[in-house]
Length: 251
Length: 251
Image (cartoon, rainbow over all chains, first blue to last red; front, side, top):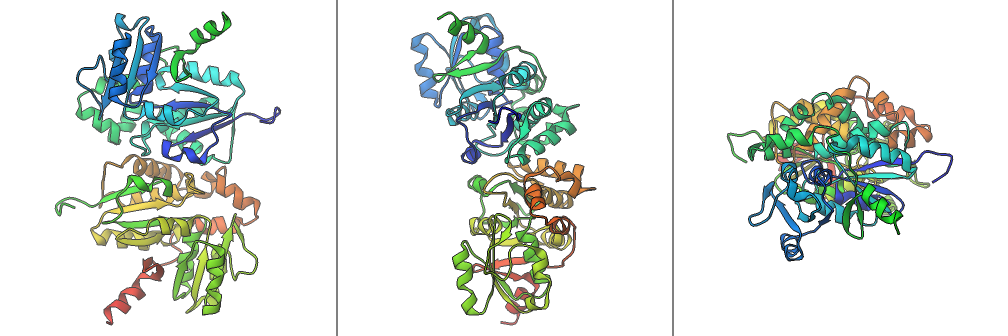
């Protein structure tokens, strides 16, 4: 990156399109608004010590004997036998404080695994919009948002959050060759931000969750700044960034 | 398709995402607004007999000895030695009338090849918006728009045309599971349709063509209804649909 120029901001609409992007020198923001990355923010806000994102339900369950709380979601619902699924409200209780958590979700944890080559990998959601925005502005590093989508398809809610970041970072970041997805995401956010829930009412995953009668999850996930955390990946494990930085500083 | 329900309308933002979609029973509309599918419409409007979309420049050139006019575009420019590149204005002359044409372009012809499993494959651009819309309404068949993008990346201009189709077909078609990309495309079209050129001024391919000093191509490609043709693929060759139907009827 030219030291005189602004860092670049990019948006990848699906893990299936990651082959178009360089990840190595970038901060990747993984986005799964409904609901994985929102729930991760809530878990850290409520004192979780660490979160291990895993691919399979078996892998998640295997962490139970190591003293972890274990979570698994498939098709929007908690898998039987697990401590929680993917609802942010599952992570708002005293059990979470100090807990080690393993979790697998349909799309979010897969997007994290697909983005593993990033220089830094952090987790974004409307729940940490301002905290994340402020932090990204200070890094002076190229940023790539990776929308988890739904089984590799484009989805609106992740796009809207990427657009929110694009809007709040537009003064501090420049556009790369891959600019059209940034412009699209920003425009979609600008026309929806006064009523995100209303805008999404005809979208695919909204209807899926609405049919599961978890509208309160949707409302929560589309409300900005309910947490002050940034989950960051280190050696395959998510930590809250300020605690990781303190731990590193103490060595 | 349930005979009581409307056919579905879908939008795929990149050939790299085609794995998410069924093609077999559908009409696929291949879109490469800047400029391949616009130029194909213009060629048929000016009397071209057929167009063979090919992958490589060598393949295109090999058609010259068979009496074809040959075209090749790479990185927005005509490849040396060919009769034309990818500008719609190259296809507005007397030479085109009755001509057989072979052409390779960066993204458009590749998107056609990637969509070959469609039940019917037609070519769309702002140049044939109304003709194509009217025809699609009469088919009572599921429609999938395939945006060519740029080297598998999302692009805005193809998305805006898909959004124009989504807008004009919304009364006659329903949404499938893959609905978010349709909603995004339609919203982006609705906020840009009064000034498509202005909206695209910061987009990737606009800037690429602008830097090649071919703004008149951009203006042309973003102007609706300059032709009354529908290019349709049969056995790997594009024909104008009314001529193909007449030829079939004469057997």
